Length: 438
Ligand SMILES: [Ca+2]
Ligand SMILES: [Ca+2]
Ligand SMILES: [Ca+2]
Ligand SMILES: [Ca+2]
Image (cartoon, rainbow, N blue to C red; front, side, top):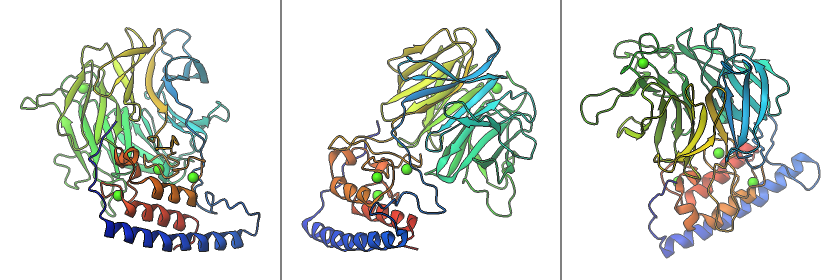
């Protein structure tokens, strides 16, 4: 787990200012609650988590499950989305009867699974279904796609996927509307793709510029922003990238630090620790680097054919799939130590994802919830919705060791520390959400 440095002690004069500010905020809280209740004209229960026109982000505690895409290229030939507990028990097929599944992503708050299917065929995904496998549908995109990796930006209701036949990254709203057909044009066949909603960048792994199977030509790339700059069109794969819309952050280098990338496939982010991880299927290894590509590390080498990778930063774990020779799912600590085979004897596991706890526990034992899946833990009282009690709880706990040791998760104003300013930001964000503040 990422440990941040302790802040300086708050001087007494500052504490007095804090108390004064809290009193005025409490007044605002009371005023706004009365205002909201009056508008609601309903019972005394004020559901501030679901203002009209805003995403509710109401969610229960995470299921703590692994989901993976079983490509179905062997055994019964039926591609499936599978899930199991984090220790490998309670294996079940969620989606069955598909064709060559590759990537999978889960939106627990929205109650949906998304997956990509048969990357060698056009117009074959992405698909969505309910968490119990019902209501399978192809996203109604209206443009030509193939699909391999999928990644969700739940906070902004977006799905991103790589289209290997079209040689590009595309995105749409989670319901398939508002398609960006040419979001990025890039090196082919990126199976690993991940959104950083805090840093506002898209990361992807490319297995190279030529045909698949070439060694030493893999690349890890990221966009300079999530929203394409106005007037510049898509992010183009051109020499020198004159638009400056994306950058190659890691590629093979013979100088220090020496590293090789052959066919990086799965890719995952630990934005709390500022790291990008990837699995190189033909390099037979797991690597990571800082988000800007600096300090590349080989964490695990000599694996058979690692493909998908997913991270559980709260427990300090990574999970990956291995294909072909010994199809299985393995877990290790984030530094690559303590490898444990979670599931062996699988069919053909490609991508995987986790629905896990996304917040550290507070001093009283409450584990907050990250309702909108951006790794900031705004539902501090863990009742499944955003309310003013979350603000009060953060005020009471922001200087505790539990919060100060994991500041990233509570740094709502993004200034790389947690103090009273984050209480104010959490209050203001909620007040805006419920319409009390403009
Ligand atoms: Ca390659
Ligand atoms: Ca959040
Ligand atoms: Ca709450
Ligand atoms: Ca802060």
